[in-house]
Each structure stands twice: as C-alpha cells, then as structure tokens.
Image (cartoon, rainbow, N blue to C red; front, side):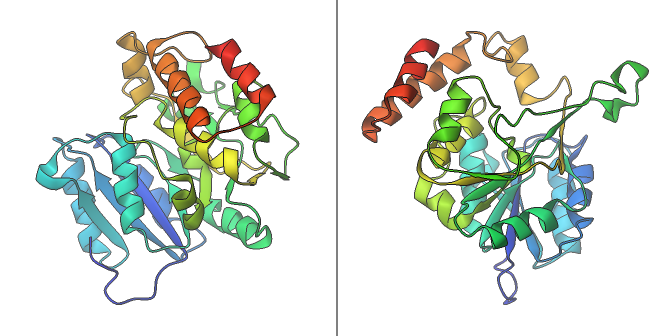
Length: 284
C-alpha cells in the first residue's frame, strides 16, 4: 500500500479483507466507488488468497493509485479475519474507519449518512443501523421475499451509553452490528484495543464490538445502508457445515469459545456490572 502519494489524509478509511473472494469482490469494491461521499481511501487486505481475487484487488489498486491500496501478510500467508482487520487499521489514515467484506455491498449513501451522524454526534464512538440480511441477490423466486433487516433492540436514532448494548446483546434483545454496517472513530478502535487476534473467524466481530460497547457511547440509527450477503460459501455457513457454529443462540463450540473469552475479558477489565455478569452466567 502506498502512503497516499503525499495526498491529504482522507476522512474515511474503508477496509476490505478477503480470502478467495473472486466471486463477489468486484461488486463490493464497485459499491464503494459508487458512494455519494467521496473523501475516502480503500485498503484491500489479502488474507492469503489463492484465487483470482488477488489479481482483481491489484488491478483496482493500479487503476486508483493513492486511493485504493493493496495489503497482504508477509509471505502471502493466511492469518485470519481479526489480524487482517488489524493490518488494515494499522495502515488506515482516516479519522473514521468502515469495513466492507468482499461478499457484501453498500448502498450509495452509506458513508454520506453515517459520516454526517458522527459529525453531529461528537460523543458517539460508532454508528450502525439495521443491516439487511440479503438473500434476493440470487434472483431465485424462492429468495425474493427473504430479505430481512436486523432487529435494533433500542429506539432508533438514539445515542446509547455503555454498557447498555452489551447487556442487550447478551440478553438476546438486540443483534450485534454487522461489520459492513458500522462507521467507527479510529481513536475508538485504538481505545478498545482493536480486534482479538485469537478469533480467526467466527465471533471476531462480536469480540471487538463487545469491547467497544463496554467503554463508549454508540449511535444506533434507523436506516439500512448495507447488504450482508447470505450464501453457502460464507464463513458462517462453512463453520456451520463443520459443526463449529449454529446461527442464533444455540450452544456450539464457537459461541462457547467466545463466551469464555468474554468472561475472562470482563474479569481482567474489572467490570463491575452485576446484571451483565448475571446474563453471562446464564449463557455459559
């Protein structure tokens, strides 16, 4: 990744991590290029791909020098989702950071809308909305009416103080944000300690969002500006087929690993929230 070619730092750094994402990555990148807000850079972080997604990413970087950059781990090795996100954050120059994985897409006003919210809500460390679980992309008749937005669990257009959202997440009253649906202050990512490298795949996003929502106010908006593609080759589906994960709140190895990590993390941070601990013990 170039250093921006001496250009001023953009307001927003977009990070797209990918591993063998040739099927959808071009659509994801094009949805960033189509944004109505244009003060951004895009960091394409290759987690050891062996398909054409590497060449696709390099082509976009060559076509948009100083604005789109390509990153990889030493030796083109695979390090997992958390480490790849952290690599992108390390190189990000923007005040705000957004994530768009290679199989998801944004609607055109996503960055414009969410940047305006963070500008008008200086106390908010992050903003997110009602991400759409996107089935209809297939064009199949049986999928056309399956799209659903995530349940917010709080009144929309609200600044939620910590650790309210963590209690709602643990209490199954609200979904955690989707990574494609957030815009975060870079300083807040650093304050929360970034992503947990031990989570290579499942629950890497939840571990980070729990850490952030424990310490900082978050603005929850009513709008839906992103589409979280549902498909059989997604990380969640692959883990489910391996018996490592079940959607929702059913007991499974990945969720158990996350909950045990959370208990250790809360203890290490000396979090004194009896209701939160009660909810966590119930889940364990």
